[in-house]
Image (cartoon, rainbow, N blue to C red; front, side, top):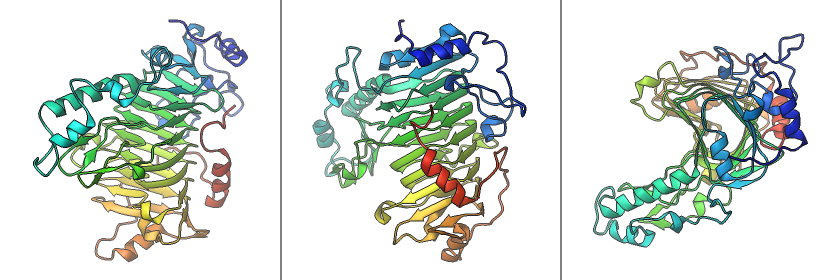
Length: 428
């Protein structure tokens, strides 16, 4: 297929790729000397994704495998397959757009007679008990599958995706599923909007995550902005007495995924945000789900920042900001057999939010925390939690390790740098 002509920046990328089979040049301390973002690799020691050979993405792509994309169809084609490749996103793209550029509305995905009005009439608890089933639920599933085929982008192995400047992907699900060696950087990924929530008998359940790492290894996610865009779940209507939510996760790491580094990103205004491990009974996750979260700005995330089951999470030098006490549940979720090691993080909590709310126990036994700053002073979130929960305290000892990591800064210094540099649009 044809892609957009390269700009001067893209031409530079091609020049750098003239010998893709050779290692990148190194400086005196062994770090690669690379100016082009598509050719950059994860630095040695930068989190769990640097372990066991590191994460290079498409850094060694041949010239013909370096692409510039500006439409949904170009993006889908460029990121497919396992050949090393670099994909530059040069313009804002909306997933819910036809090949001719016309928008796709939710009703355009509906098939087999599905409509929200008919669905609500069929499964009203006044005459229906339990989860939805039957022809209208089948029609909802088929409609949802049609939307999935349009918005879910399946990233192939050995891929680097980079935003050029400050660009946004709206409505996409970036799906890193059962592949190895992926880098995603400098992109604003917004509003993975579910047109067809399902009624499960008690609540509405939504499907899509902005970004999901499932069964994959060696993944570096850097300088991203993740949010719900123009869709505020709290403003959605209620049906059957329950909020008709439109979003699921923001960034999930699940199904035996492993060796992931999430750095210098801004995540904002979401409910079920960072879920790492998606079931208390998924024992196959033992020994996996090793994730590093560092130098990220986490703003008004209502819960799961992260919630961890089984995995080993190193959470350091992040900045948490919570402005609405009515929409905050917790940040660190201590799940079954989890190991969270938290170092030098900063919390700015609005009036009415107690430090004890930072942690919630979900079947786990401990959290290892040092150097936390809360509202301008050093304090222990773990001590606050244990004082508020004397009958079920958490241990300060965990079984896992932090894994490889870069030097950990004092929390106040990290806060200043994160506020200046986290999120999309900050890489050249």
